[in-house]
Structure formats: structure tokens, C-alpha cells
Image 1 (spheres, rainbow, N blue to C red):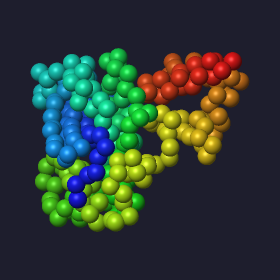
Image 2: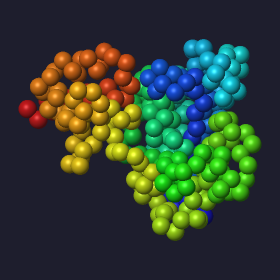
Image 3: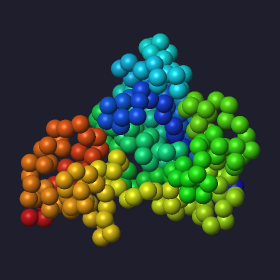
Length: 256
């Protein structure tokens, strides 16, 4: 089943130096852009992360320091990547929890205002786990009856993710062929940021998702404990979390 799209969707996958959203960097990114008529274009870039790639990470994706020493750094590629995904929805495998937050961090470091408020994010892993609970390799075999022979290659994983989603739509009649619906279905908790430090409560209000103010309304905490804002801004939190927190603070000040 082909996707019914009202605007393009970019499936993407990252290979990185590790799994810390705030500290780790991209070493490879592959994007498969699917247009409304289901035509496709794809690009894959190796990236010099500017920091060493741990040997245990190289053992997973096969990319070493030597492989990327002469590749462009992310700030050189960011304008091309941003132009490709701008105005598009996003799709990936475990992308809501890892790839999208980490990509946002890299974009914000370059000065690009990466904002996801109007973007539908379809996480194929979440759909899979809600239906079958397996890994990407197993999903590819289960849905597409193919072996993912080049797993942990960004390009192979990206194309496999796209094929799995189409097969999921064929297999499950209750899945709507609509990016916004799939985005909602594949979401976990509704986050105000990307990393889950700020979440939305049942009243659709931002609340803290961690620490001593967990479950407390962000606006109320910032008003009663103004030092907490400065502590977060000066600590090792993701840039996107800080961006959202600043917007909430400015919004509150504007109402006074």
C-alpha cells in the first residue's frame, strides 16, 4: 500500500557516536524523501562528528574515526539537510525518542531554528511494538519477508523502515493511511519538548517530567522558583528543552 500524503514525509536514520542526546554527535545520516505522488529521492551523508567515535560504537555501525576524518562537519551539511526536510513530516524507527531529538540538537547548535510544532512524526517502531513487539530486523522479515542484511547502515535501515510502514498499512486495516493519524498512534506520552523532560498533562498544560517538580505545572514552578529556570539553562539539558522552557517563560511574561 502506498502512503496517502498531504505533504512530503522524510524517513531518516542516524548513526552516531553514542546515545546521549545532549553530548553525542551524528556520524552518518540518510534521508528518504517521499512526495505526495509517492516519488522518492534519497541522500546519505557521512559526517565528521568532531569528537572521537568509541570503539564499542564502531563495532555496532562499522564507522570509525578514519572513515569520517575527511568528511564534512554537521554545520556544513545542516543547510542542505534543513532544506530537504523543511515543510515535511518525519518518519523513522525509534525516531521520536532518539533520532528526532538528536537531530534537533545538531540543528540548534548550528543556529537553525528547528521547530517541530507543525510536524507529524511517525515512529514505525512504536507501531510495530504496539502490534508485534520486535526489532527492526524482525519487523522487516515479518512484514516484508526479507532479510535485513546490512543492519545498522543508515541507508539500509532507512529504506527498510519505509518498506515496513507500507506493509504495516497493508496488514492492519485499522491503521489509517494518514500521516497525522499515524503520528498520533506512534507517539508515546505527549511531550512538550523532545526528550521528555517537559510533558503535557491531561489539560494539555506543560508539566515537568522529572525531578522534584515532576508533575508540577511549568508556569507555576517558574513563577514560584525562578532559580530553577537558570539551573536548567546552565545544566546539561538538551538545547531543544531549553528552547521550549524559554518560550514558556516568555509566554507567561507576556500575559502579565
